[in-house]
Length: 154
Image (cartoon, rainbow, N blue to C red; front, side, top):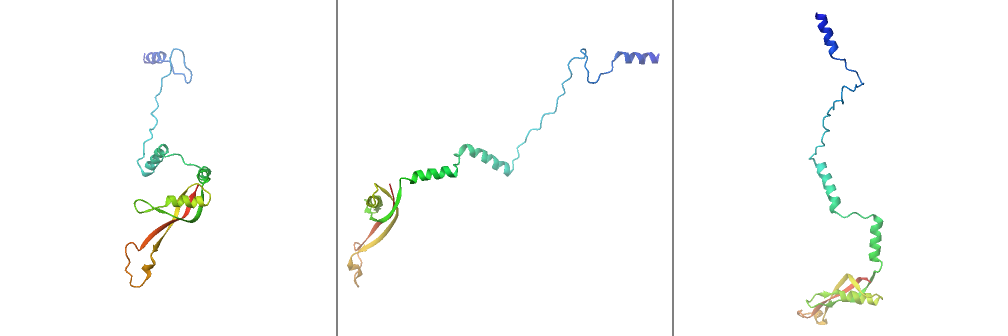
């Protein structure tokens, strides 16, 4: 009897077939894989510098190549020329020198239309009385004259 019970137990359950499915078994069970590890943010200095560079790409204009920079500079400087000489600056209404007119005069003397002052020089022009011994210098005995000595002309 014990043998008959064992025999019936084997008969009820068929042994599973490896790799082969019978139509009675149905679809295979879905095995869930553990989720992929999530990349965690490293709050270190290197990570923060990386974030700064990523943000700066959208904020800053793109850098030009050296050849583009040289082309831009040559386009700006092409119609201009630097000249040297000496042209007096006029006195402005506030008492200071106005060297724009002096730069224009210097450039016009060299055949250009107008100019921009690059270098100036100042000198003091005094009455001959100032150089006499015993003469006390007064407020109107000397005046400062300004001159444009170098200009960028167009």
